[in-house]
Length: 106
Image 1 (tube, rainbow, N blue to C red):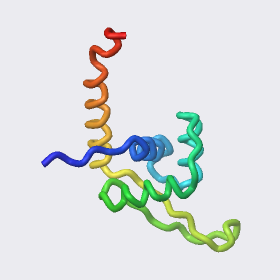
Image 2 (cartoon, rainbow, N blue to C red; image 1 turned 30 degrees about the vertical axis):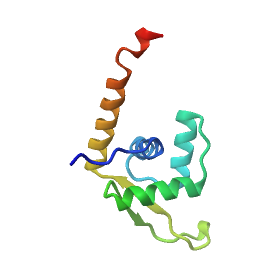
Image 3 (cartoon, rainbow, N blue to C red; image 1 turned 45 degrees about the vertical axis):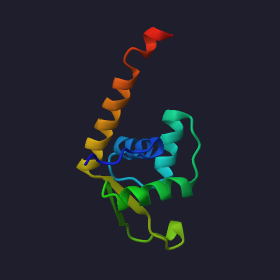
């Protein structure tokens, strides 16, 4: 059975984490998405996507030590797993295949 395809936003979030060095948290992920796509996102939207991706076994997370600057709260850092990279490549290939010939029709 083929793996369930990734949604557009899931792909964007995964690529942002990869671009940030594979150890990032929600705020820089939001900034990366805005910088690369011009798309504003909310903390909640990114966190929900990351939680879903973690449930699918595509990312893992860990909590850093709490810091005084954050009022004693800890940051949750995310890392993309190799399976996610494979799924991203499959999605990219599928989209490129779908675009073949479309440009010529316009």
